[in-house]
Length: 320
Image 1 (cartoon, rainbow, N blue to C red):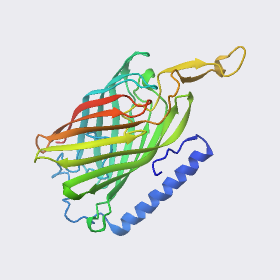
Image 2 (image 1 turned 180 degrees about the vertical axis):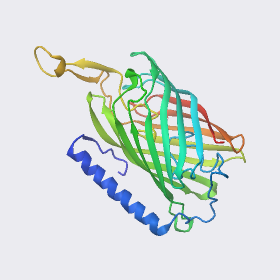
Image 3 (image 1 turned 180 degrees about the horizontal axis):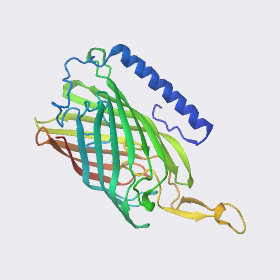
Image 4 (image 1 turned 30 degrees about the horizontal axis):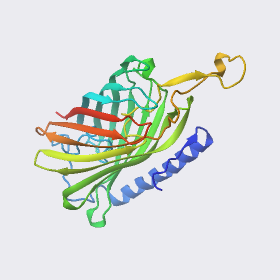
């Protein structure tokens, strides 16, 4: 099965996976240098002076991220001031006010700064504070080749840190990477999907981390000139760390019989059955107010016990 989880402890196996992904990245870069970025001649390439909020469009509106980047000098501000996820076996309910800042460093290279922002966590471990910063970059390889049914492609690499994060929401360095694809479908539908891998805390032992496969997708269609509707979902995680990649519902246990020294303590999930794997499916919409601003919403349901039963947010994206 193509989306079967790739789960392993950190160590020399991790570096093997990184080498494989690095080889794939080099191959894609070489392909883009041969094919160029003008494969889809009908697509109007934006510039910093002609950039609008619909091309390439918001990345926070749905779970996957686009293969396209902002042009050199282009800027997007995206935020969801109202965002809520319910509890799961591995995490408490949370309210977030997330934000994403995007800047076109070059026409095909975009630098990004993301955070879940102001965060309120519910029972059993109540906490209020700020989620840490995630540094992100996206590289656009090529536009869509409709004649050959080849999607537009790009690479995204990010690192979630503990910078500016409150202790309750810090989980150490958490890297992730994905290959991003965009493609048109019959009947004016469009599909966007990301395939990659990310590092998660193991709910059964929070002192360890594991690598696992990630997949997110969205199918979208314009209903009117200003309104688009979409369905979307993810396996393990959305492209950005929007759903938590660490567990806060844990207990301290002693792995050995007899007196337990502090250095011997490990943390594991309170609830049996908590694991890394998460899956969700939902739907939402995008309203384009003008060429500078769009508003969007997304409502999703979890389909595994380690996934929040409900995820919902309302937000907007803006460009000057």
